[in-house]
Amino acid sequence: MKMKILVALIVIAALNGCTKKEQGNTEMATPLVVKVGISARDYKQVNGDNHINKQPMGVNFHKKHWSSNARGTVLVDHGAYSLTLENVLHSTGTEDTDRPNSGIYKFEINGGLAKESTILHDEARKRLTALTHNLLENGWMPYIYYNDPRLSPEQGYKYYREEDDYYNIPPTYKLNLDEWMSLENMQWHFYADGVFLEITLRRDSKRMVADEPGAYLIAYSLYGNETHAHNQFDSDDMYNWRELWVKKIGRLKSERAKIEASLEEKGYQIFTDYQEPVVHEADPVAAAE
Image 1: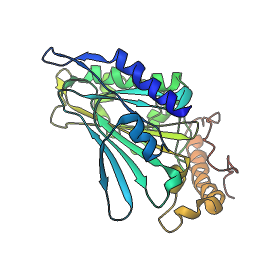
Image 2 (image 1 turned 90 degrees about the vertical axis):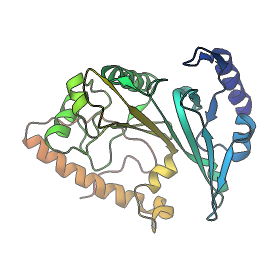
Image 3 (image 1 turned 60 degrees about the vertical axis):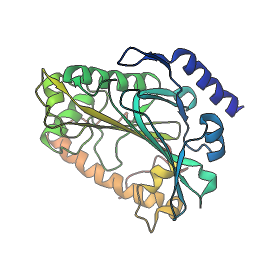
């Protein structure tokens, strides 16, 4: 049944994927379908033969490349939360042969915000805003690090500007052009039904005149609950995360509580309605005392 759904997605996209190259020639685009946890066999059945870079340590990288003149389309198959990524240049799926049940557990996808190599900064801002808006409309939820404060869009941006320039601005905050041009940290985090999505935007620092074209690279990272859990620990503890989760997350949330208490003294209001992802059966874990 799952395979039929994946094949159907390809057919639909192919029927709607007739695009024009910059030179004016018409080409039928064949999308790449990715799904966190898909087996290497099913991935090959859906997408055909792609380059596999086999590493001696038991890690396989499933790679797909497109040219800058004929960028690709990636369909992220995630049920009701599925999405389409356009103007893709590279896709890499990571598989650990020592953990066959995890399948291809992570996908890293890179591309641009447009078919062309440059784009006006305000248009880039509008496209990123549309992307994050569509994710939220389709049920993806913002993710906040366990030891970062929970803040509303406006206060989150204020905290980023005045307190911590590594803080991820809430994706619900609508940046104006001046704010967009001043950004240092351009990263947004989401989750939906056991899958996490990181979006990172980089731009050419030599093309920063607001009313002239800039050059942007957008990167998407997709992975599941287990990889998210591993990311909270060092390499010695990551595979014992289930036993260590409550203690570790409780400590991180204690750090958050201290920051939030300090911010409340400065007049910030804590966004207590924030919903955390359920990764462990004990979630939501309370802050350690």
